[in-house]
Image 1 (cartoon, rainbow, N blue to C red):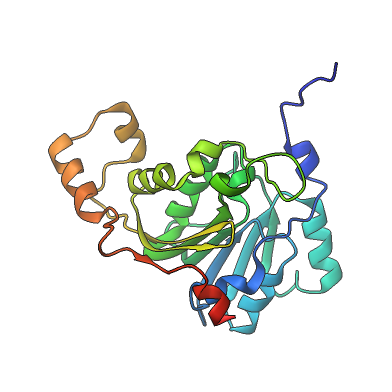
Image 2: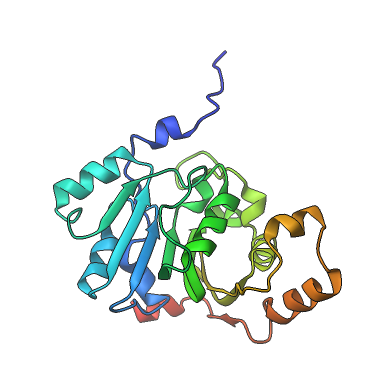
Length: 236
């Protein structure tokens, strides 16, 4: 009988992830002249597209092949790329450093997606945009061909992920389903008067004040933009 390897990253460290590449521009207009972070840059398609728009591009990935591939493809000198585990390590940038961040086709592989979100929130400016995509577990959960394994599939079901974003003080601006992939455009709604998430988890907060903030800034089904099926195909 085989043994379970506690660190799936022993496998991931040797890979170069595929990611969503520049496809994200059809969901959210690519920024120009901004400071942008990509979490899990994989094969670097998005990094290169962002560089073409005169952005200062930063990226992290745990795949050694991602780093060596960036060297081979000639864009490591143009972007600020680091080999880093976003499940456990702190991002080496100051608070409010980035205008926009991306995490496409990566969050479902993380052992600690909460840590990644907290770090993304910290380095993003207030009202900064965070574009997140992942395979929908409702559509393709499994181990076979055409299927996708998730560390925490229940976490990424739409209702659960919406509540998670709310608790992390991210507002959902857009939601879109492209085939079996879910796309979210989030806005960082942090402010200086906000209760820290650790206080929220412990229950040590002013319930009336916190509830009012969450209720006011959470998603609204009547206002949340949800594109009809096949819209992105028309854009392509």
